[in-house]
Picture 1 (cartoon, protein in one colour):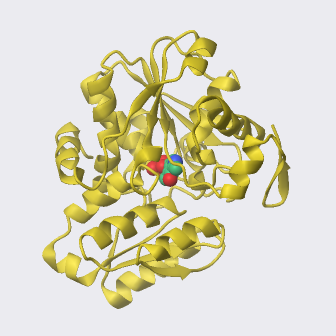
Picture 2 (cartoon, helix red, strand yellow; picture 1 turned 90 degrees about the vertical axis):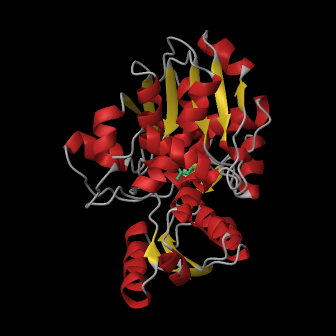
Picture 3 (cartoon, protein in one colour; picture 1 turned 120 degrees about the vertical axis):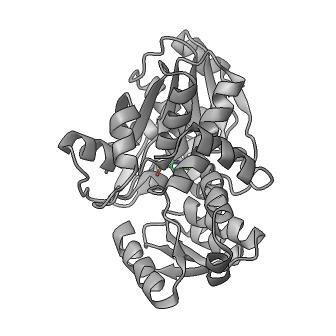
Length: 330
Ligand SMILES: *Cc1c(COP(=O)(O)O)cnc(C)c1O
């Protein structure tokens, strides 16, 4: 499992591709919580999400031979975009496999970065089967979105920055899907401050890590449309890294309804002046839903901004939005 030294090495490797992001105090959320609540704005990364950190680190670790043959991934959107960006910056070929659940705005953004896009199947697992075929047929290197030590170490650089900026943090609240983000942050933060609490937040509609931890092993969950589309997908039945790291280092997992996520997004739009996608709003949403009880300074990872413009406009205006077969309103 990656350790603090590896995360520190990743911080060096990604400088110049990923940004050190701002950490800003939210007056509105701090007043509500009675504790200082800070927002780590990964929305300010070049591709609008933290995944540039892991992708840039993984690209930096390729052998010259691997770099020559190219890289690929399957992705709910932001990892594909990050890999496409980091690969292009290094003149490396990238292939990104996406399921039909990935929103069109994200598909377009990946193609515009120069990656080859393969749209395939209805879920992450179908997209993964396509990447497995490409690894076998074309000898490209699969860089998975979360279950890989270099990805975990890259995402962990957020934990380093947070504790350098705020050594007195009591807890970090992290959007949770496959668990690369929370694993890296937990390793870094607990190495620097063992008593810090790491809290994951997922949506009720398909919380794969939470269901897996409850079962004691990785399980499949039905993938459903959700406002937090970047949190969709399973953790992989052959999960090698993030399941064990989460079991050991995550203190609590909170689940949110679609209406609660909607209210988090609306709060960030109206009160904080932030454009965020659903996955990024789950920390504030959990606080607004009274599912978090801060006992000291608390950081929330605002993980990405890549939302469909029309969906954002509707939520900021307080209008209902259609998410697959359901209608969501605050
Ligand atoms: C990928 C992603 C997450 C979840 O990260 P995991 O490492 O899969 O847990 C959260 N928010 C956004 C915006 C993402 O793109």
